[in-house]
Image (cartoon, rainbow, N blue to C red; front, top):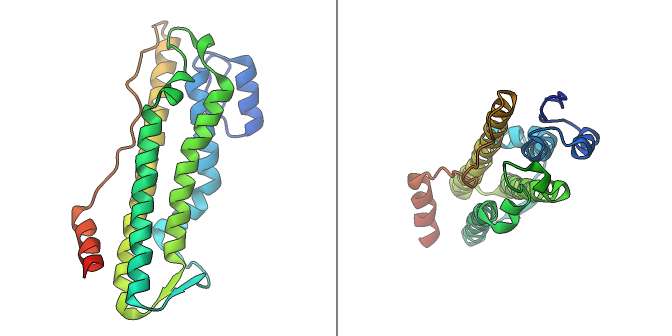
Length: 213
């Protein structure tokens, strides 16, 4: 993942990203966006892996002593996850996001600083989800309430995995643009990015049933 000179590629450091934004090699708008995501994702990868694999989280940072406290905690985190996913999806379709890439046939219309800003904002959604997931895993509860908290953790972990699909989509678009440029073809106009969310209906209803009870 480097700036090859012929076409822009994903770069691993902010310094290399700055160089790309100055030089603006072909495909630089999507390469810059992918680089911002990659750099942020890489910085959080160890935490994300620990979260998804359920590695020891260290001493609890909070304690939920009653069933009512656990239910309120879980309800809050479920709503917070849904809100972040909704915000992220709306932002990816928003005129603000789409405008920074300019028009595909004229990369000079793209906004380099704007691409960095939207990349950081998208990365911020991912980090907020990770923080919510980590908060769930660091709570101490009595054995009776442990299954509900465990299901909450499973619920929050899923969007973390789904965000991996988003960055894969970005990388695929970049690779496709690179191939078209190298072969002398015009860049394509893509449909807006979307965050494809996996919904486990059984898990969701299991959580909701216990919250209602």
